Image (cartoon, rainbow over all chains, first blue to last red):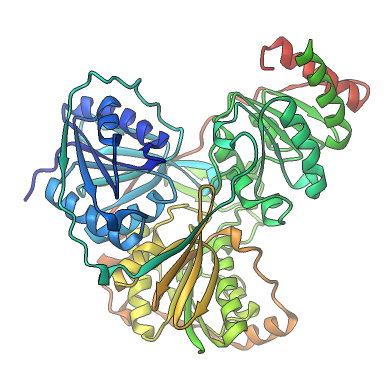
Length: 332
Length: 268
């Protein structure tokens, strides 16, 4: 039986560069690898990887495996699972990490079932048990109401990691590492899906994931018109507008504005929650914010348990005066 | 072309129950069901039923709902029938308790093999209790069929499914050959309400109940015994809960005071 060694990170590219979650995974992977005194490995797949392998080394990888093939231009479950299955069987890493992204949440479970091993999705903490040397995988469960820690004795031990839960290392161009291409053998007849179109629904202005200030509205906003007032405050703060699930489900705002367990994970300096009760599934997406401010007419609303400052009152009466005062303070 | 569709639905504790009612039995690593709050069909699974019903509305077909668990409340698990699904099969036994994604997907896939004919299988993107998000992909892998996860729209044309898959900043349109498995996300839109006619029809229907031996599984392969993932600890994160409530005579004054406090605290 193969000896399973090393921490392997499955890396993703965005516009030709390593995605931020990949640098976070490498940061976390480096820590785990050092604890075990083993190597940090990275695997990248795509049609053109460019400088990304070198970047992965700068962010902490000892060895980067590259799968480059025109058939890997777009992520597809069948092709990527096949490539990863072969690589993992050949390289037998002890731990295999993915980002909790559109790709990771599709690829990781399919691969885990093909390999017959266990997987924990959306982990926010990973550590090595000093006794058993097993990966302790902690993740939110029950919509964020609780957390659970899992482990498995099957190898490789697989986990996907929530965005922004881990910190990347500062990139260091002088770090040494090896780049090794791996052979891609794909039978097009076995790829049972075809990507017909990719539709971007970019929101104008600051992206939610990058925003330092977010004004988020919930069910209490009552309709699309209310969100215009939220936009005004966001503009003053040079931030972005987000929402909990109900406004998205009711089509008041686009789905891409959803923050939460099944939406975006954000970590701004300032998060102003307006007319938003603070359901656990929403908090899962914003609890990493540095300062949460709540405006809600229900003093018992769960959001006040998470907030640093709050006003109990009808947002329609609170928000205009708040926006005016913030404008005044920022101008002065 | 009428399609044979299967939808997997899980009975879960109501995720809309107030967070304050959420309690854990730490010694058993289990959640204590909140008193007086009945369980529900996991919301994403209801939307999976909705996805199947929309296809049935368009071109006809048969929808079989599959639920796995123990002590399944008939009023809960029959809800998809009252929405318009045709048949309900329950994998119900004490031995199914305490499973993980692996043992649940394996049991469901084995039952689907026994059902035999299917063009499309639907699951919710994740269950509202453990949020594992693996069972759909797992069933597809065990059955050897292709899958698309996190769908917001599904259409059938020329014997293939066209699926809109939610991605970070938009969606992808993916064509997939049948039979296929699709997991459904909330972006699909709300599931329809049960009609009175539907409720009456559902009340008359008796679910088929399968025990592990009916699908040829040994007790060692199912539930807690069949787990591949060990649960070490279930706990509630500690919350500091120190919110400074800014008060004033009028909402406008409170708003203004809040802005000033944020300035003082160097937050803005």
